[in-house]
Length: 464
Image (cartoon, rainbow, N blue to C red):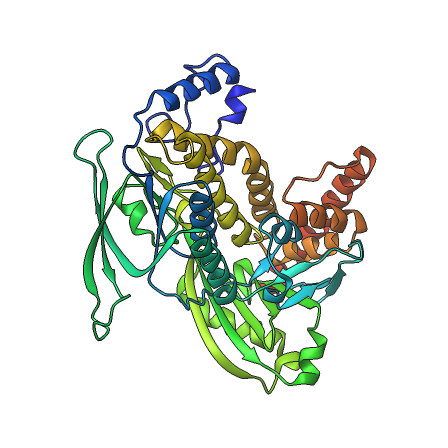
């Protein structure tokens, strides 16, 4: 079990020896020995004198905000650096129910409580999803600029120093336990928009600065495959908005994306319409137009009020940790396949990383080292590797062709599939199944795929 628990999901496969990932199972016979050795190492680390441990969090999204708040509450002198305080990332904005409770989110930052979804196939067959939800269950819809600002403000209230600045680079420590020197452009002072070059010395760094992470580049974390997400915010009439009051739509098909899906998600006074792709990035605007056309009758006459685009990671980076620097959120590559979900996993990874630093430093009184931060990676991989693996398999099986997508939508009509899907999504655990129902599902899945393959052969004949 030790080797399973310590397996990383870099690219959703076990990492090879030589990269900076979790490979302790060979040297440590049991997980108990591993924990005992790490605790001894932490307590033997030097005490910080005359001050508390200093940690910089680069990036002020959900990962950075959650990390900074946890650090500050844990006695760490915390600095949060964020360039765009009003950042509006092109993001569907869906959060699971468990996040509301776990992160104590106020209901007034949730624009909509989605209790119904429509999954729409390439041939425009629509399946209604949500009939298995309990009365108190819903998917929250948020605007990133609202959620991110709330989490940053809460970090500041906990004692973190929030710096409006652009992180540039970082000088590595010149000796064990010496500081990292961060170089950034500060926009906190009145400098006519030009900014002021500043430096900051800290004991550890959390990189929460997104898919194009400069912190990741500083530790040679390696590249990953990424998708381009494109989204338009469209304000529609009140009558049309009423249709989307508690409803979200997902469109699948080669027209909207060859390897992802298109969406229409409701916000406070508009809808977010978007799509994404890994394999055909140059065609993203064509896919966006197709998504709008598929939803045309429901959004016609609407006014585009904002256009957004951003890279979205497709799998974790080859390296997520080096010495006293750790990556979280999109910077680490924590976005799921198939669903493209990242908000919850960003906030959760930021909190887990910060908790490891607080624990390892004994609430800021001792220096931390790589073994302290590695505790976060081990816990993360053990908890979420199954979720990422399942969604990776689903994407490979059902997003490969239009007939396969038709089969996928057909499966979504099954109540058992809906229950398993929502239970896993809302509470972020791979839901345990019923053996009999699982067998039925396997048979139905095979049947759907057989029909899909038969349909594909017929379509191929027509195209000859």
